[in-house]
Every structure is written in structure tokens, then in C-alpha cells.
Image: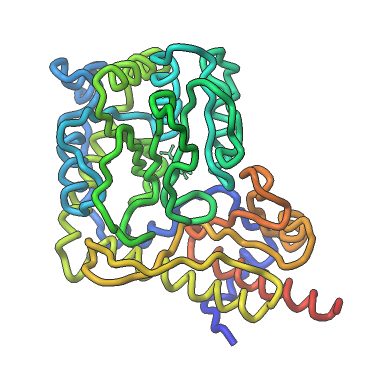
Length: 381
Ligand code: PMP
């Protein structure tokens, strides 16, 4: 029997819990303990200009944020920053749209097809359809994509929603027509072993899922090609004339503290995050095993260059399935658990995406309700 702690939270006992969004509140506890080390003071006269660094192509990027980003990647070893342009965005949500815009505007013919291998991050659909651009067109699942002409493949690794390590799946002999945007939102040591230093043309990262500071709305792109970077910057200028400086300064401060803790024995954030995620996954796997109704993907172990040992993967979302033909998102809703349907991710009704990054008490209530669903099934049988 799996032991579930903190289960007696009365305020939560009857409420609907929302694990549809990946709101990363799980890390609040850690940053509370860090206390004033991350506090930033901003006076009324500070940060008033639109400009941060007129000598940089991305003139709205705060130099201290650029520095902190480079130092963090160097400390973690997950991505190359040399000979690249850093483009800052209001979350990597804005940057993904900027990158799709940039690649499409530089393509010979339009609309450019945009694809991602299912199950994919459902927001890509909204990002590429909402404004009804004539420059690009969402074409859905990359596995079945066979349309001629230029295309952009979105590769998310580890993947949201199913946590798998991904590479491109559209392989054309006429390679020139295909461009790739690598979304590395979850390529950090608490979620997955860091097996190599990534070195792709366009790599997206988000502050939201590293430390949990989603509210700051900061993301960055590491871009090799100058013209692509320029077009991305143009897009952001038209869209929002830059990115909040308050957010950038706070992000720079927190990333610096994060980088310092990388070397620490006592308050290492990645160590903390890894232990928490591992613990949650073990509890969830325990409930799923006992239920005999649900399924979860298995992940191979790999040597993590950051931790210096062989480790498993503990993704930010659980890709929960059922062995029976059922509409799982509705089954869970009846048990007051909101999740994202597999259908929205280009998959089926038997799967849902469940956030693993909620506060601890919410996560425990989820486990309890999932365990009870198993009981109801058993009685039905
Ligand atoms: N890419 C992926 C794969 C994500 O899961 C998310 C957050 N859910 C984002 C991008 C966007 O992150 P943000 O806009 O908060 O930086």
C-alpha cells in the first residue's frame, strides 16, 4: 500500500483540483527557504527606458540577464551558447511564435507547414492558428505529414505531454525545405538526465519550468542564424516593443542564485527538484500499479553529465492512460480532477496530461482520488 502524507487537508477535500495547466507552484517551498537572497529592489527611477543595450541586436535584452543565461547553461551543460544570438521573450510562448514567424518570412513559398509529432504540446495548435496567418499553416501530426514544400517541425524534448526524448521525425531528402525549432523547456536536470550539450539552430528555453517562476513570463531563444534572430526581434518589437525589464532583472538575479546553488551541497535547487519529482513519480507509479486500470510510460535510465551518475526521468507531466476504452478526462472530472485530454494533444481519449508540478497538498489529493477511482472500478467488476 502506498503511503500518502498530508492527506487531511480539509480545505481541499471537496474542491475541484486543476492539473490541466502546468502551473509550477511545486517549487515555492524551496524559494521560500532561500529567503532574501533573491530579493530585488527596484526604485521608481529605475528601468524606465524602452532600451537595455543599443549595441545588441536584441536591444531590449538586459545585459545581466544575457550573462546569467550563459553562465547557467555553462554550469548545467545542457546547451551551447557560444556564437549564438540570445533573444529574450515574454515567455517562450512569445518566442515560439516569433520563431515560426521568422522562419516562415524567410521561406521561398508560403504558407509554410508547421507540424509536431503527436502527442504534442497542445498550445502549439493555438499559437499557429489563432491569428490566421497567411504565412504558415498548422498541419498537425508530424508522423503522418507528407505535404510537399517548406515546413517547420517543432521538437519538444523531453516532450510535453509524454516526457519522451524526441528528435525530428520528418526526414526529407530535400533537407533544405525543413526547419526545426527545438523546445527545451524541460531539458533540465530535475526532469531528465543531461546526456549532451544541445547545439541546434533554434533552441527555446523558459524560466517558468526551470525554477517555477512562470509569473515572470521570461523565456529565451538561442539562435545561430543572424537573419532568423533579426526577424524574431522584429516580431517581438511589433508584438510588445520588448520585454519587461523588471522581469528580466528579477530573472537574472534568480538565475544567478540558481547557478550558485548548482555547486552547493546543502541548497542545490536541481538536487531538491530532482528528489521532489522522483518522490512524486514513485508515489504516482505506486497508485497506478495498485489500480491495475491506469498506465504510465516507462523511461530509460541514462547517465546524467550534471549529476555525474545514471538516473531516471521524472517529467513535469504524467501521460496517464487507461487499459479500457473510456473518456479519461471526463472520468477524472467526475472525481473532481481537471486534466488535459489526450485528444487536444493529437492523441486519444484514453490518455490525459496531468501536471506533476502542483503544490504538495494538491498532488496528494490527486493521488487519493486516483486511488479511489480504482476502488470504484473494482466494485463495478
Ligand atoms: N513550451 C513547452 C513545451 C511548455 O510546456 C511551455 C509551458 N507550458 C512553454 C513552452 C511556454 O512556457 P512560457 O511561455 O511560460 O515560457
